Length: 414
Image (cartoon, rainbow, N blue to C red; front, side, top):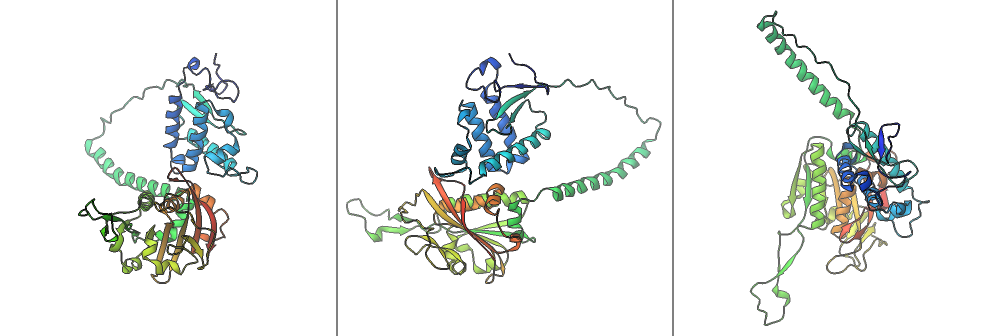
């Protein structure tokens, strides 16, 4: 039989800190669906909406608990399953899971103190464990409020009240404007804001540029009686954009929409060198092949003409290569480069986001639009990095055709 705790909550997880979803859930009239709905509300809050890693962590521990596998929630298993660590991952050398658990506890505490204070089902992560508890908050009886008595200003003439209303309108508008400005200035600046601040300084729109992927089709007039020849292949120019490039553009444009900064998207040959000189630009994915002269003079560069394809360091070969890249470009790993630089040729801010394949491009865009990822990537950046040129080389594991969270393997600031 459930008992009320002193703080007015009912523990739905069974005895102690061991969740009760493996046994006896129907005895308590609690369904996993209730917990999942509570989890969805948490993810819609401001504290979790912009933190994908916090969502991934909390969803993982909640689902494992609901499935009755709470005993498997160990630091090492979470590091491998949620954060993409290798099988040789040693938690004593990498505190990612512990740090993220502490952050999730803070975000949950803030949520239930503000937006979720009236939620009936609460998800809690007690200190010292990765096993969540699901708690039902008993509704508190609200005191009966006395009904206010309306007093009509019958003794005052109508013109007097009309004058008062007209005087109050501009005052109310001024208060609303001041409140909006205060909230905007008070909003905490994330590491993503700091990364993009030099690029988005001013009112000039950001140019998002990507290129068409070279694709060849077979001449439809070819008959099946004879074998396919080289001249039967027809280039399908200006028709296809890489999936990773498209995802990168979508993520960056979504970030720009949240910050209300103007931007424009151009594809393929529609972009000229003059476009790069008129304002800040982000070159996405295959664009690095078209603007080879601009990219090649930087320290880290994706050399698509070298075999194997790789990231070079001042023109020299590195270990950041894909020697076994298949013809269909479906790979289990990738490398990518993120560049933010004031370019001397264009005299404007330039951001480059490119992978050796589409997976790296998508992961690189994810990095520079996700505060958790970028904060981890720049945790040891030099002071004042916010206003320096920078390049990051990323290694990306690809799992079932989806890039995992990228890991920085080299950095350069100047």
